Length: 299
Ligand SMILES: [Zn+2]
Image (cartoon, rainbow, N blue to C red; front, side):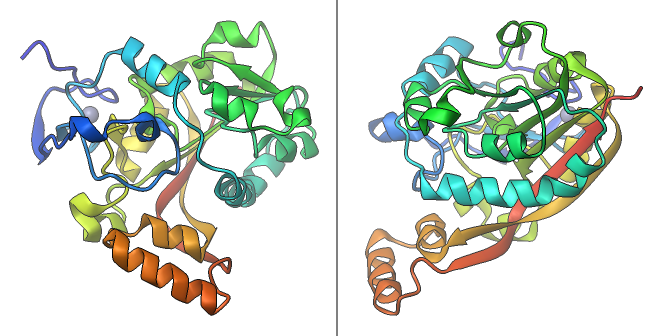
């Protein structure tokens, strides 16, 4: 069918069924396109590419719909966003140390910018966060807000900066064309510069176990990577020395509870129990099926 897009990583058109469309129009609200909201278990029709192992929606919403949805999305993060940035900064540490350049660092899908102070502390200058949601930018502390640029990622937003590092965490699933994103990133980076991305791994044991109840099954996700698909994405753009690793996310227990597929009543009970025990804000690090990939642009 010519209406369907080819695999956005390897351009193959042969696929196997993965999940049928489940969309409840009554529930497609402002929160649907916000990050870290309670899982809704709605999804586009998904297939698995037989060429590269990517799971993707062959008929995603149009680009202008997505742009509007994200720019108007409510912002529902705060402490969780900070905890996530902490996790990513820790995983990124050794890769940043190995990187020679300290020109611009650009975080794509920066949200309220929790990673930006870390990048600044690592000596990158300037530090730039790109974020389509105005609500997210307005939620940033003033010093961070000054580093945020509103919009979808494009070379034009960076007006000729020398770029040493491009990061993008939990954003590639939301892009209509992740191949173009990594190719653009490769073009912008200086020789020896690096890209670092964190994505869900649909092949991770927890995600396989939860199946269609996994939080990665989400109407916003236009593709889901496996280690093989992610490596292929970076290789095709010309990145080398690609390193992949699972990462542990540290969050308060109350947030883990929110992500579970339990009924709302049970969640409420458990949350009150955790609060009474004084455990609701206890940080717990778990491998929940997310992976970090870093690739270097050859000199
Ligand atoms: Zn493919």
